[in-house]
Amino acid sequence: IYALLMLAAKTGLRRKELAVLKVEDIDLEGKKLYNRSPKGVGEPRLARTDADHKLLDDETVDALRDWLETRSDDTDWLFPNGQGSHVSTMTISRWVGKATDRVVQATDDDDLAEVIDEFTPHDARRCFTTWLNRGGCSRDVIKALRGDAAGDMVSLYTQYGEDEIREEYESAMPKIGI
Image 1 (cartoon, rainbow, N blue to C red):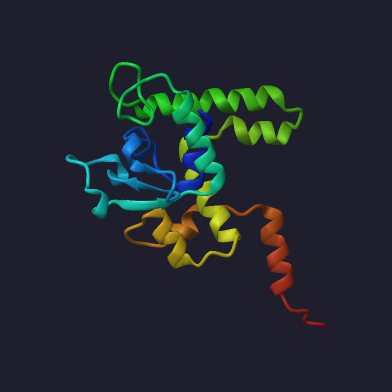
Image 2 (cartoon, helix red, strand yellow):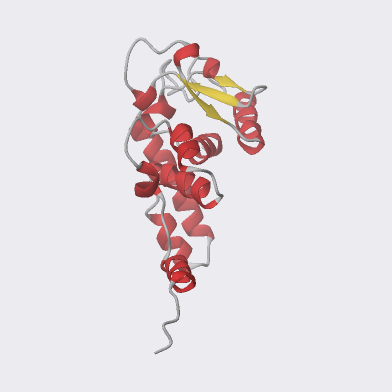
């Protein structure tokens, strides 16, 4: 589950895109993956040269390397279902649910537990966008990394807390001095 969560959060891949990844789509040495089924649809899969490339950081590469070394299924699918095919999107949702349940049970922080308890695989895509935006990446870079075709999805997916909004508001609002 760790490798799947790392991929979801650090590449912004959708559930269906995660489900249909094959081992051959991962380039650990080049620190990237080839999303050969954007939005998880379309057969046949795209050629590597036409695929949407996702960058991987060292932490994600390590998680994938560990997963590939320890998984017992010998299929082409990165996340196999144990019956020779790939996992379903519902299985991914269940895995994420189990992982979040463990976090909720392990924490004494009620606020964290409340947020994590509602966490879905799609929230990982929101985290990805928010982290890049807050980290100073340009909108064009974020759009390219997300694989967005059109529209300003960066604004839609970036989440700001009330404290952050207030801080920016107060720093931008001039003193009128009346």
